[in-house]
Image (tube, rainbow, N blue to C red; front, side, top):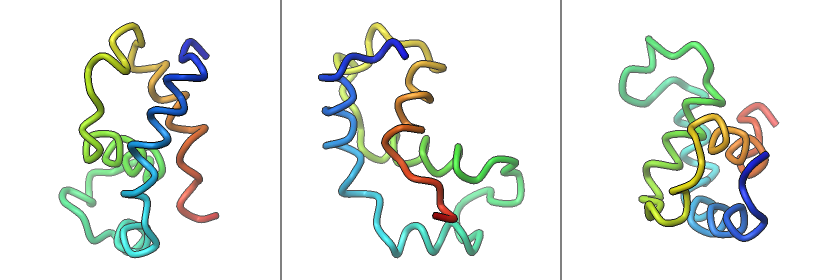
Amino acid sequence: MKATAEQLATLRTLIAPNDTPERRARYLAGNFPRAEFVHNLDRRYAWDLFYLARVPREVVENLADAHIETALKRIVPPLAA
């Protein structure tokens, strides 16, 4: 993973407040925009949290999407968990 410990901590701080039981229940029920087109619910949920958090560009400026996704997998637990 290319994200530093500092980047990971910042992402966790920004994303965690949006990862609520209510939001998780909505996603599990398929109650979100364009749910019918989703193939990987955990991936969609993690990226939606990322965009909802409005992560500043400076936090992820040296990371490719694949690196951000790896960081999200570490930060956001699977919905079924």
